[in-house]
Length: 323
Image 1: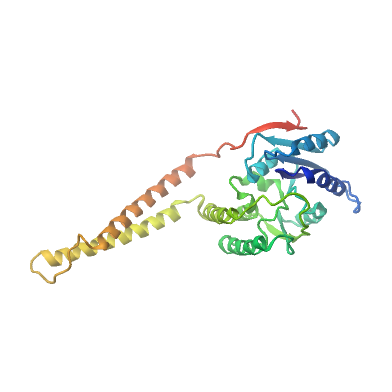
Image 2: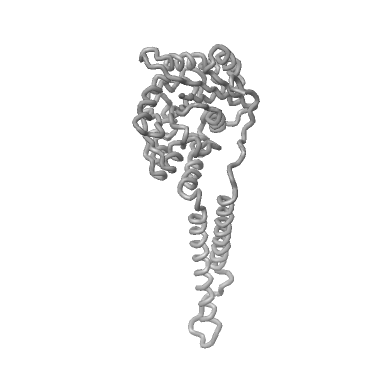
């Protein structure tokens, strides 16, 4: 079975049209190939009546299921809730704003059938403002360079992957955009497929300028998780040793100068040690190195003895789920 997970936040105007397009694809209209699918809408605290539309769709079609959050918890939480509730062996993420075309889904399934575990969409021709397109290209370049997975469009809302991928990665914050990276780090086969990106018909983008700063910080998090998530001391300890070594060398140099100046036979006269910046820099570097080493040991203990955290969202209602 295919499970299509659709996060919804104030997308009431587009839901019925989106459902119609997905239904046409699943019934094989135009292709003759039917798809056994369930459709999960996750209402992320919408205030425009989107949940009522989800209720109506679920009443009309047993394939439609709904989850409603008590408030807005973010797209990653919505996707995480939908993916956890999914019963399909193949999972598909799809945005609710109609810019992603559900007609692309059969091509994604065919790509998975070739042996890939994750298929990521690539909006080669984007119908977005320039101030979203060009920073996105820079961001995708940085992600590729830092993670070793050079995809053209890491943040594309249309993705398909096997259930095993979801079973082995955890989404929180805004890490949903890094699903291919997290999967690739665990050895899954990842590829991309060019998709048709459509102009926005309803509403407006939910992302502002702040998303670029958050994206960069999330990129650093992903780099740390994929590179040192199971061995944090390797990076924190290395930095700690470097700062500790610099501080120790600085203090050792000052100690040698003091000996040469104050212990007979007097060899050379150096400036007083107290007012010199090298003393303060060396002490701070020594302390910083010790702190980083301590943090590294604590991080190792956390990795060794701590399991997964509880989910950080609260579900108010479920619709059409067994039991």
